[in-house]
Length: 165
Image 1 (cartoon, rainbow, N blue to C red):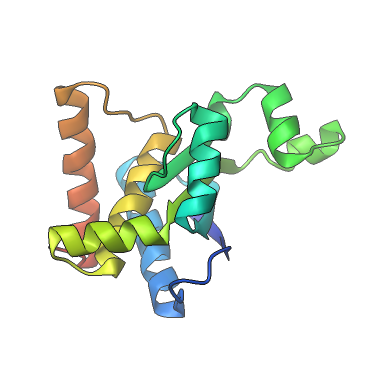
Image 2 (image 1 turned 180 degrees about the vertical axis):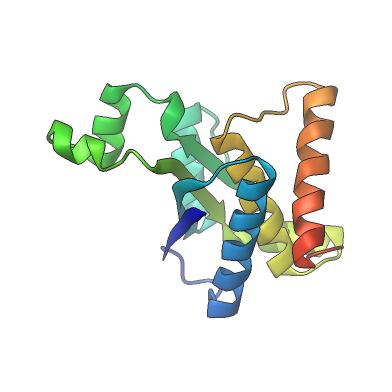
């Protein structure tokens, strides 16, 4: 299995520990295994509410902050990939071949939700990360049935890694 997590921290509100990143890597491997995915890369970025608000407004036309955004490359047309990644040639585009997509998490929103639900920030970030990953590979929650499927999958992965409520 060759599933990789690349991450960056573009916020300064909550420190991102190596222990958290290791948990997220375990979650990624577990979720990928559950879905039969043996190869790929996920780019994860931690941001504040202001930045995720901008992204939500610009890409989804929803003018408010959100907790997590996912941008799946398999849903993008070449032009969108060129814009998102500033791709300049076909060879560079081919190097994105294993990239599943980007997940962006607002640590501010995650902390507020962790407080609201009465669990740890680590658990909430893990939940949002798995949720974002499932979106990257094609899951959605437009109706009650599809939402239940996603929730069941998220909880199964989180439980295996020990991130329970």
